[in-house]
Image (tube, rainbow, N blue to C red; front, side):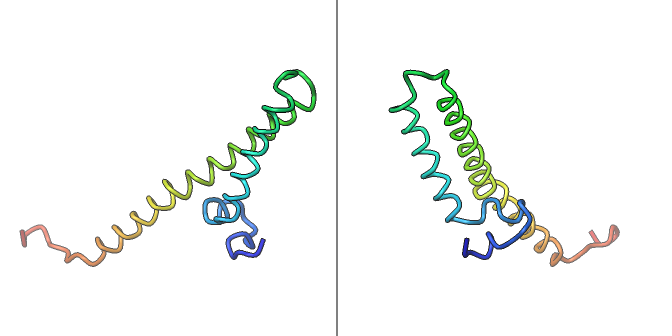
Length: 98
């Protein structure tokens, strides 16, 4: 991939930061479940059907992790950093100055 986040080698530095990855996971997840529904729904005990189900859950799980990081964890971390910076700028009061 060509984006800077995907050039990183550590998994937790990539997750939730690359829009291209999330788009690809969304497409793969939707296509996987559509193919399963139209081709393998009648025979859910076949090896192909089970493999497609596992792939679909893997795509959905990774997409959920991307979205959770993007919309919950990363904004929360940014707010925490912002609050810590603001607290660092506040004047400190000694106990007898109050």
